[in-house]
Length: 114
Length: 119
Image (cartoon, rainbow over all chains, first blue to last red; front, side, top):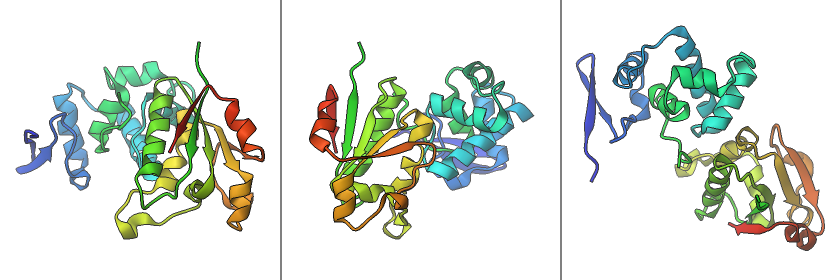
């Protein structure tokens, strides 16, 4: 039995699963991203947003959420080798960038985060 | 000592869950640093043709497969006989960023691997 966590944003109750991922991906908005990030203790800067946008691009392109290595590769491909490094992503979305980033970007939980 | 792993994708993309299970296993292996090679054979070759599964409310397996090179899986093989028998040609298969090789002698090819996962 799942417990039903919710996030209240702008007076609306947004249902989350027990790990804090959106239950309905259509609920996503930049305000909701801010709220989820806050729960993760992350203050979103433009450096965060460019990764979140890439996560959403990745999902649109492949219809799945990336694990760490493909995320690093994808970021490197689009933002260059300086940002396409795990250390850069770890700094932005500790402790597991693929999972936390996907959560804030409104993607489903990566299936192969074992 | 890392073992070499081959994933055999033998079934059509929809109608059973085998094709989906296959890619999930491949991605999980890749995430665990045990990157497999993949062979599409029999009706599995249809997995590599563009699809429109929204009609049956399924996720797009073809699009998922395009992510294989991103996950480090860039050795993709296709059984030549399966392609010919279905009146298809190599030019119809798309997998960006991966080197796609046609394999003739499937028995000898499969014997090269330590572990074979069949889907």
